[in-house]
Length: 111
Length: 116
Image (cartoon, rainbow over all chains, first blue to last red):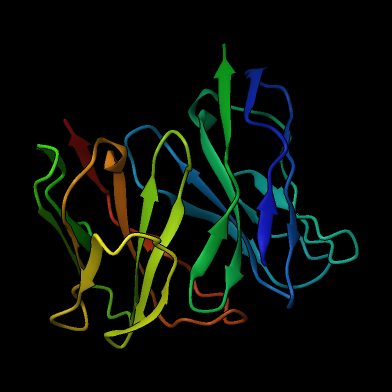
């Protein structure tokens, strides 16, 4: 079945340093890929999404490039901010289920 | 103003009891979902509805029953509650259900259930 893999459970870094969160997926079809962000005690919210191979959507300083050849959709930001501390989910679209989510990566940014 | 309203926000229930989680969306969407989030399995899909019809059910237990009285309502009834049911239950909606449509899911703020 369809699945999404996020390899890091926890990422800790110092403010101003770059951050990259890994995401790979397995799907029978060619799905949309999404990144959602969930701040403490809040609902998950869309960060960005993509369907087009090798295109790089950007939002709030984050970007991710969908590479269909490697089934990857890694999330990156060049300079992390304290407010980026949150739980990040990679997800792929699955017919009739909305989205299937990875296990999530918790990002903690320290001053 | 929140466009997806979930009630109650917090709930403590006794083992064996029955509770209903309420969800209403005011986004004009045709598809609604329930997801569960716990320490063991973050954001786990439970049910999806499209035009008030069940599309998919990945919940093994029949103790969880979705109920859709209107297109913009999808409540979740949970019977014979167990401590393992303790989790945050998120309602979500999207314009349509479809794998290649790229529909964004919008989430409510969740109902946090603790079963003692």
